[in-house]
Image 1 (spheres, rainbow, N blue to C red):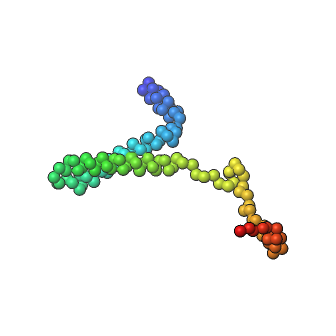
Image 2 (tube, one colour):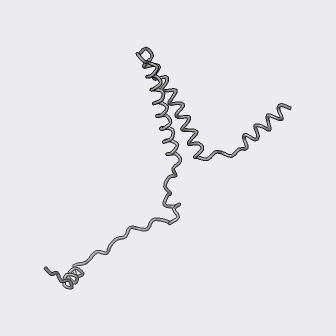
Image 3 (cartoon, rainbow, N blue to C red):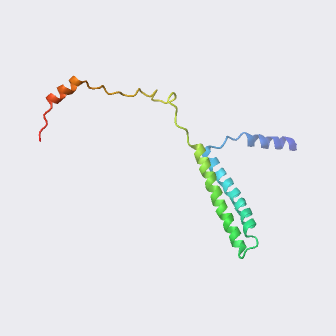
Length: 121
């Protein structure tokens, strides 16, 4: 009986859809903040354990570590979420046109143009 109830519980958990990127951003930001808090707490205890007013210094380093870890995790998640630019072959506009080359003027074209142009002062 317990096996049947537990299998029904786990099957409903595994059948849930995968969260979107926005849901994972909040998750990874909180994980980064927690990891940063732990690293900041460890660094603060290592550096300021015997110092005067060490509790304030330890908590300050832990809070700064949490802010840094959360910010770093958010930026990494955001960088992974942005799509890469499409390749030329997969672009909706089609392949890039060839570069436009302007026709070169010959000496006769330059003389004709100069003769038909009046420059006034």
